[in-house]
Every structure is written in structure tokens, then in C-alpha cells.
Length: 90
Image 1 (tube, rainbow, N blue to C red):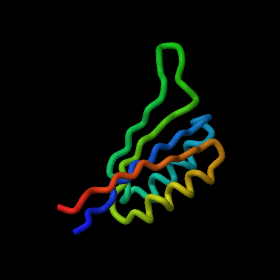
Image 2: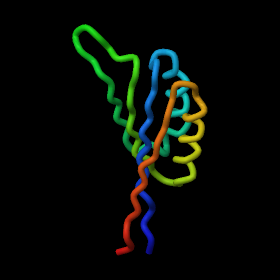
Image 3: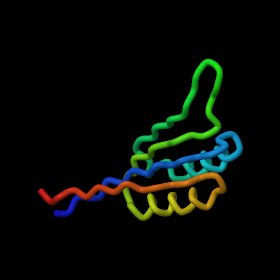
């Protein structure tokens, strides 16, 4: 039996404040396919970065992961890359 692929999407957003509303809308639309979401951005006492990086661990139908990826990549200021792991049959 072949196990499903493990798909991680890395989502890089520039000018977060301008682009995050569209990104968040898609995250909500595809919420049932996102198992884990981790947001990373530089922050200190004096600065909050305008760029951000999110890692999404996808769940379920893998076509939904790539549909989300395509829709996110269509947003100006957003770049998405996929990491895909396959699991050997056991």
C-alpha cells in the first residue's frame, strides 16, 4: 500500500500588511487541508519585518495543496515553493 505524500508549502510574503488579507482568505478557504501552519517573521523591540514566511503542512487530497499553491503564487508579492516527501510502503 502506498502512503500519501507529505507536502509542505513554504509561503514567502513581501509587504505583509498589503498582501496578507488575500493570503488569509485563501488559508481560510483551504483550511480543511492545512494541518499545521507556522508563521515566521523578524521582530524586535524596534522593528516588525514587512516580509513573512509561513510553513504549511498540508493534509488530504494533494491536488488541493497544489491548487492553493497556484492561487497563492498568483498574488503579487507572494512566492510559494513545495517540499514533497514520499513514504515507502510498509
